Length: 108
Image (tube, rainbow, N blue to C red; front, side, top):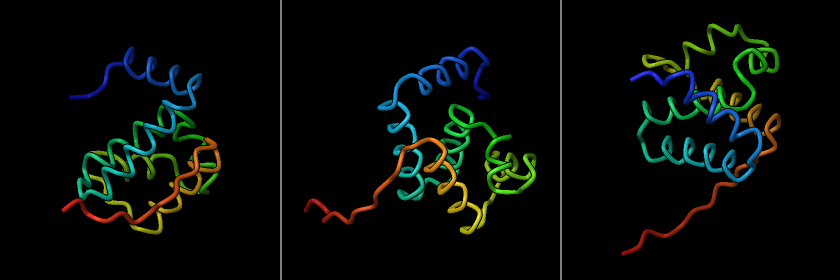
């Protein structure tokens, strides 16, 4: 189900004013990808992009067409590792949310 404009605007406004919310959105997107939920993770990254810098600014930072980036993170998108990591790098530098990956032992 597509997000309504009101919902997107609400999320975008909250992300703009609340650094903890912005951080939680980004963490959730990456955790979802790492958990192997690729479609949901891709959608979460798309939502994070829309809530923070937008595809136009992402396009300028990466030097890639905006529509291409939108397709990558669309329902049938399939970004390469190079593109995905490039996007994550730009999102970290542009939003000020920097992720750290740590290994943890499984709870047995």
